[in-house]
Length: 446
Image (cartoon, rainbow, N blue to C red; front, side, top):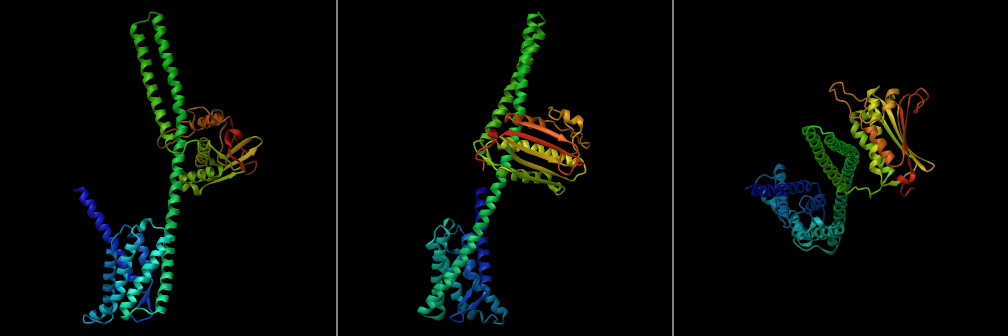
């Protein structure tokens, strides 16, 4: 039953497209000039008609759209004739005069179906050749019916040139449509890649904490089992020994579940098709960073300017770590500005200093207090508190940044207060300076 409903909906949609094609063609056919004979029209409909046959009716294999278009053309012309004062009695005369022009559209699609069976797969060259042939032959039929005799050589040459011009215009319109669709697909692909890239970077960031938890769980399990053995050696009650053993077993189960989660996430990351064997240029990474932060900030991006500048463009396989590092630092800077006066700027820069690549993230926000400076990289420490919800941040962003920087063999330094950022010696804010060996990051420097 459901399948039958879907089939009926598809059929109804197909007839709607046929009707739209016929109506659009019939109306555009009324913008015309007469040539050769009084009732031989040249209009823009013959440019629009093939375009609609290839776009709206690309799955058509029979000239049913041509039949409907011919009928619609006659109907519109009869209606306009009646409005012009022809009356009911004049309809027969209108039909006799206008039927050659209506037959044109039936001949056109009949020939088109014969010449090009799979129009949706045709190249622009094939379409142009088909349009030209269909236009010329259909016009020959039209002119023959209008004059009552075959066209003379001069008229045939004129029809050939007219068909050439109209077919080129139709192909030009189709090229523009295909080009715009291709550009939209490229933009959509880029957006999807950015989302996938950021998701992968965030997952790899979270993997660090899962692996760290796995090490802690291993230590807890070992200590619980050691406690079980020591309780046995000291002749403690069996209940205490079994309790210690039970804790060790439970922690072991938690460890197995944790490792399963880690393997699952690593498998998903590996299956995204954006593995570390791919390289990304720093220019592209900065573009994604700036675009992503704009989306995250939303309306606040009007108050917080983010400027990215690179000195050396290079390709790196460590783009996930680098994106996680920079995104965390830029996000912290944006939140600091929002917690202060609400407006400010963030500068992200990359430069080559000797054999090291130096990434600097600076902001002109309220800066970092001396107490916070001492605990910045301690897991669990955070100054981000939401008074409305009572929620406090996990305090894992900067420790994760430090860990990833150290994994790359680098260092991270932070400075805050007057003189730390652009704007003179009185400017406040914070400056994070990440130094990573060039050999750990760079491939194919230009």
